[in-house]
Image 1 (cartoon, rainbow, N blue to C red):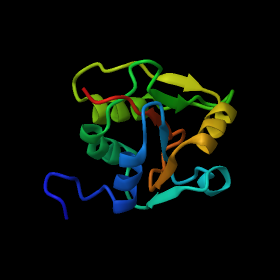
Image 2: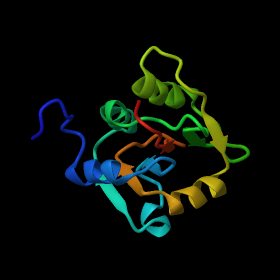
Image 3: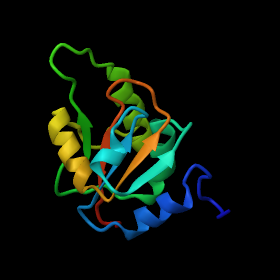
Length: 140
């Protein structure tokens, strides 16, 4: 156990975060995400909610300032999107600060980026479209 480090962050997740460089991406995915089909580096975080993991990771992870650093999967035509999901994720990342905007991309584009991500963290999140991509920046 490391002091001041959230116990929600597994050793594998901490290693992955520390190995990522500027511009590298990581996915925090819901329980339904096809992670093992898309990316060979899958980190299991069963039982954890995405917002809780984002809050644990936020102090350790500088977001990219040169490209949209927060990306979410847009709903498929005809599906409803629960905007409270984005709000929970943004609050976990930025607190009361506005932070950066969220970029919304199609499911296919999100899957493509998941395939190139440093890792996909599969959580116990059960909300629809509960997937988020973070792009790492440089710490100041």
